[in-house]
Length: 203
View 1 (tube, rainbow, N blue to C red):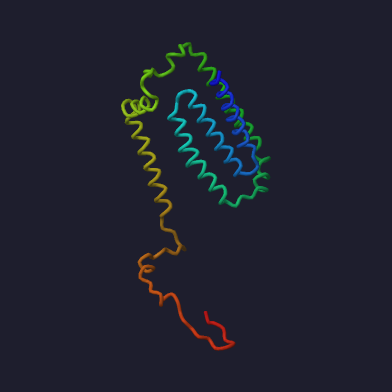
View 2: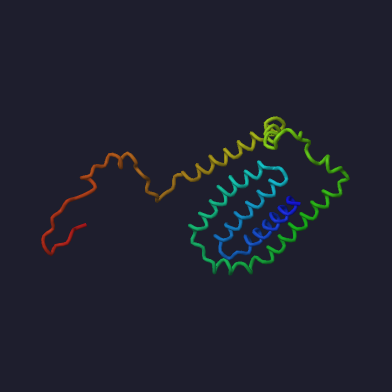
């Protein structure tokens, strides 16, 4: 009974916070509603026994991704009038995209229930005495080891590419000379003058 109440509570909060993420006029409020949706989704994952995914939602998505979004949105100078002006222009495309996504979800649910396979056969067999994290780690590092390492290589290449694009040589940019700054003496940076009365300081 408690699990059912908790499920409906978390599910309703996820739907409500997700809807408010889209409908909020302020981008900062949208990110805050998104963080609330992540927390409630983590609660749903705990209810189904996937505590590792719940931990990832809280640590990775809330602690890193959503906070990064929040800081980026707060630092940007967003013109809200311009955003509202372009809403009507892209409204037909947005409605079409919603219809396509809804049709895909309906098709996926129908295919799931129309397979003719027992529900117990759809779930990967996991012994009851093995924790969820241990079973997931065993599967990743045995059967899907090469795929897991390939995903790590893809992320490494993306990281190196981001660094290379950031540090590329660009014209008109004044580079920082660290050695010259370290060797600079106080007398090179300041100048003591004694101007006469009524005479200003020459810059």
